[in-house]
Image (tube, rainbow, N blue to C red):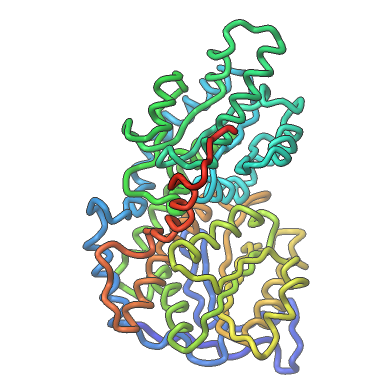
Length: 460
C-alpha cells in the first residue's frame, strides 16, 4: 500500500524554532543516491493514488525503448559509460589544437540550461566555461570582453543544436567565426580558415540529416559528439554536450562515473513498482494531488548560488515546455525571500512549494544556512501549503557527483509522472506520444519567423 505521509508538528511546543529542535519530518523517504526528500504538511498528503500510479508506471514501461517516444534518456547514463574515455581523450585533443583552456557553449534552451545546471552544481567551470546565446551586437561585444584577452581567439567553442537548424545557434556560430577570422587576419596568418575550424566541436544529431553535422564534416571539426536519438533537449543533461563540458571544466573521470552511476540508480528507483520507495513517483503524486485539490501555483525555491541561472531555467523549461504550465516560479534563495515572500505568504494565494537545499551533514560553517533553510523558511512555507524539502549531499565545495546525477535524472522522471498522473486522475487518456516530451506549440513563432514574410539570415 502507498501510505499517507503526515507531519506531526513543526518546531517546539513553545512555538519557537531552534537549531537543536528540528521539525519532525514524518515522511522522510530516506536518502537515495545522495538525494533525500522530506514532506511537511498540516494535513494528510498524497491522496491515495496507488491505482493511478501503478497504471502510469505500467504505461511508461511499455513506452521505454520504443522509437519515437523520446524516452531514450531513461537509460542514457548506462550508454554514456561507454563514451567517457572517448570524451576525455577528445577534450585533450581539443585543448591541444588551440592551446585554449576556455570553452564557450553556443547553445540555447535544453542545449544550454542543462549544461549550466551541471557546471554550476559540480563547482567546476567558474573561470573557464562561458555561455553565449544572444542575437544582438551589444551582448556579443560584452561576451567577447569577458573572454581571456577580450578575444574569441582565446576560447574554444562547443556548438550544440540537436536539429542543427536552430537560428540562434547558427547565428552565434557565424558571428564567432567572423570574429575569429578577423582576429587571425589581423595577426597576418595565411591559413585562416583552417585555424578558425580548430576552435569548434559540434554536438548534434549523429546522422548527416543535421545541417550542423554536415557543416562539421565539411569543415573538419574535431571529434564525433552527438545527442542520442529520441532524447529531447531538456532531458539531455547527461548526453555528450554535458559530459564534454564537465570534462573540459576539470571534473575527474572517476567523479563523472559516480555521477552516471547515481543517475542510473535513480532510473532504477523511478521504475520501481514498490511505490513507497519510488521517490520520483512520490514527487509526481505531490504535484498531482495539489492540482486535484485546486492548488495550481507551484514554487521551487533553490537555496544557493550553485542553482542560479542554469538550474532555475532548466526547471522552468520542464514546466513550460513539458507540462505546458505557466503557473510556476523557480527562485534562487535567499534573494527570493526578499522579492517573492510577500506574494508567497499572501493568504489569497495557494501554492505548492518545494525547497531544494544542501544536506550539510554537520559540516563546519553551515550553521546559519541549515537553520535558515530547514528551521525557518521550510516550516514557514509548510504553514501555508503543501511543502517538500529536497536535500542534496555535498562535498567540501560542490554537490556530490552521485547526487548531481541522481537529482538530474529524478527531475526528468518527476516531470513525466506529473503530467501522466494529472491526466490519469482526471480520467484523460494518455496520448500516443507523451505531451511531456513534445513541444508542438513553439511552431507558432517559428512559422512566423520563417514563412517568407520575415527574413532571418544567420550571422547578419
